[in-house]
Structures are given as structure tokens and as C-alpha cells.
Length: 513
Image (cartoon, rainbow, N blue to C red; front, side, top):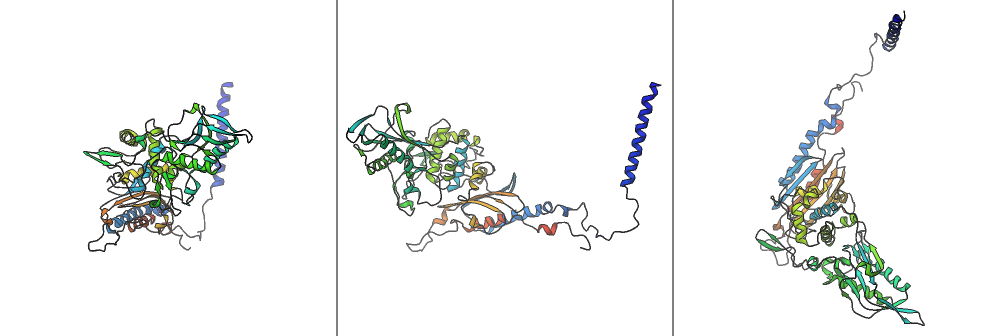
């Protein structure tokens, strides 16, 4: 009997389940209809390309974008050298001479920014004011309770490229980051005042020894290319090139006009002495007596000095961003790159390290055999420095990279006003320096696609004066800031997506609507 119990129980469960399923099916079945609906029928089949209008438009849009860029390159006044690269993600949409070596001017600084960012340290720079622990503080006037510091006061430079006084930096009116010299020196004066020191029987000494003497010289720096040795920078007349000091105050200028005309700036021949002299003047203006003249030299080790003031620079990321608009900052960051990788700030050593493995470690497509990049300086001011559209494109193609971050800064996206078409979001950095011009940037179209682009052009002929022109005639040419070639290319890019409007490709309304 027990043997029959389990089979019978299972049979009962199966029958019950079958009955329940049948009832459910009958409830769900609407049965046969005896009427026809008056609702409109579908005009577009379910399996129609119209139900994916963006996909349907994409081939035509991409082809038209490529044609638009090609038309710009074919019809615009052509420079002697030019390259263009436009991508969407990993897809190349337009390319021309992408590995050609061309002067990139300020766009060269995107490479420098990528290098220093890859060094892996977000720390900035520190500048310190101190005196030796062996210095004596002796009574000067017992009735007044004043003292004299018998010894020197040191200003120790940390290689900060943005150390500046408010009088100097406020002229730029662009909110650029800087380290306040006024805060540093007023803190030091307050510290001396708190000790009732009113006299210094010694000197104010600037210490720039973080860089060795041969690491500070830009006038005589040379680079050997093949069998030829050439100067990195020709000595300009506008004062833009000078010593690179670890104690560089106000970009290395002693005096400057109020109207930000660099050609009128007076370059310091010894930045360390210049900084010391400035602090000496501030002390005397505050009522201190400094008995000996300012000088430069090497401060005692950290354990053998008493700090009376120090200041840290803004974060490194902010200084990197400033390097795009300031050549001196870019050059100083190149030196810091060498130091932070455990080497020196000497240019030749840094460049050799970059050629050996630095570009590769930074994720940049450098090939020593192609000679498409000659990296001679950090700012691109050298006539020797050249690079390719491929190299510059790599500095901004990573959305999380420093190049893309720079472009997202509105204050640095400097020629958005050059583009007149498109309804998307455009970020552009442009340059025109001598015979070179270029743009680099991103464009997010209305359909969410991001285009990344770079254009470089070099045309020495545009700087020539036509034959027969008068003596006062200025060189003329099409490649000025926001030039016609740049504008035409930006117009072509910001026209994306091309092709029919999406509503013309979308599913049709049902018949009767």
C-alpha cells in the first residue's frame, strides 16, 4: 500500500496543475473578434531602419564631415606645411600628414603638460626665508628692548615658476594662479618684528642652488641635430628669454610697465640677487636696517637654519594649466620634470631621457626613427622644436588626462569665438606664433558624439614683404590668430552631424494621423 502512495500523490499534483494552467489560458485568450478596429495602422514596419534614425544617418554624416574637412584643406590658402587629424573615439574621421614634423608654438606645451603630469607628483613648490642657527640675536637698545640679528637672512628658492608680487601679477587680469611674494615677505617681517629685531648685521642672500649654474643658462644652451649644433633659443629683443632660476620672482623681471607689454619689461641678469634686493628694500621700507648689500649664495642645510616664513605654491595642476599661457612656466616645469624623475634640471639630460623612454612612459606616440617630434624646449618658443598632429592629438585624447582637463577650463579655451556654426559644446586652444598656427580641441555634437581634433600649419612665406612694397610695409598673410583656415576647419567640425534631420528619418506617423 505504501508503495502506491507516492505515485498516486504525484498524479494528483500533475492533474491539478494542468487544470490551473488551462483556466489561466482561457482567461488570457481574448477569443475571436467580430469587429475591425478603426485605429490607424503602422506606416513604418517594426523591422525598419527608420526605427534607428541616428544609425541610419551615421554613414552619410561621417562622409559629409570628411568631405567638409577635405574641402577646407583643398580650397583654403595652403601653407607650406600642414597636418590635420580628427577622430571620434578610436575612429579616425579625417587625417592629413599626421606624422609630419611642424612647429606647434604654444601647442607644444600640451606635450610638456603631459610629461610633468605623468611624473606622478601633485605637490607644488615651497619658498622659504630663514637665518642660520649660528646667527646671534644681540641687544641693540636696552631701553627700547630692540635687538640686532648678527648673520645673514636667506631666501631659499624651490623652483616655483609662479612666485610673484601683486604689483606684477595683477596687471594680467586673467585670474592666473600665483604664489604670493607679498604674503611670504610680510610673514617674515612680522616674525622679525615679534622678536623685536630692527637691524640685520648681515646680508639678504638669494639661494637658487636647486638648479646648478649650467641648468640656469638659456642663452647658450645648444642641441646637436645630426652633424649640426644649434642654439635652443636665439637671443630675442623682446626680453622673453632669460636665466631660469630656482628663485625666480615675477618671471625674472626687475621692472615692467603697467600695460603688460613684455617688450618693455627689464629682464634680471641674476634672479636670485634680484629677489634678495627686493626683500632688502621691503625691510628698509618697514624701518629695518640692513647693514650689508644683497647677494646670492647657498643657504645652510635645513637642520642648521631657523625658518621665519615659508609659502607653498598653488597645486601643481593649476601651475600646469598656467603653462599654456606662460612660456616661463612651461620651461620651469620641464626642469621640474627632470628633478622629479630623480635626475637633474639640465635640458640635455632631460631630452635624452625623454627620447629613451620618457615619451613612451607618458603615453605619447614618439618614434625616434620618424623624426616627427624634435623636443628642444618646454614652451615651443624654440625654432628647433617641432612635432606632429598625431603627437599633439595624443595629449588630449584621454578624457581623464591633463590635456583634456586644460581644454575644459573656460579661461584657457581661448578661441571659442572663432567658431560660428554648430549647436554643440566646443573647447579650443589656438595659437599663431611667427610662421606657425594651430588649433587643438574637442567638440561634443548635439547627438552626444565627441570629436577630437588638431591642426598645425607652418608657412614662413607669409612673413615676407612683397617685392616693390614700401619700406614701412608690414608682412601680411592669412595665418593670424583666428585665421581663415582655422575658422573654416572649425566650421566644418561644428557642422557635425551632417545629413538629413533626424525627424525626417524617424518612423512615419500612422495612416490617418
